[in-house]
Image (cartoon, rainbow, N blue to C red; front, side):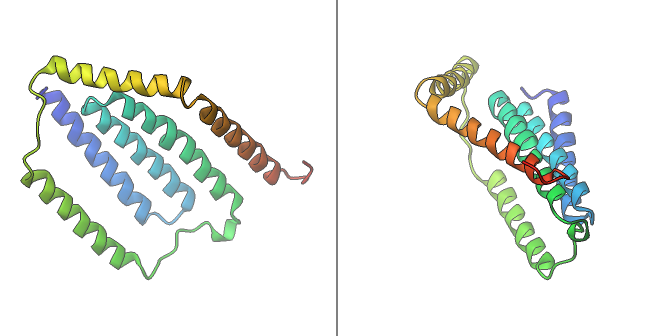
Length: 171
């Protein structure tokens, strides 16, 4: 598990994720900020893969890098061209200070806390398989109706957004 390739991949993906997240904060064009945010979401999915959390990585790609990104692109495209700049704000410095303090707190907790480990690799693999199986069964069994209603609502929202941006204004 302590492979050199995984460690290098982890740090490269961590740098990509943090760098693209910082780019979201710095860039002036709102569409470029959304694209940097998508890159940050994909970096997070890669970090989940390096931690052997395949299901969470795929959920990250589908939900955040897919659905949320499309929603943000629709929102950017529906805003007038004059208000698409990512202007300066009075809250930039306090936000940076709060974010830095939170990052320092997380780094302290990651280093100081004695995290428990699963000693047996077979038990760890079986725990992940049981979780994925339980989530899959819940989606097609217990929560099937809610899953279908959510997909229908997303379809209606997508059709409504397309109708709003049509040039002729006809539904």
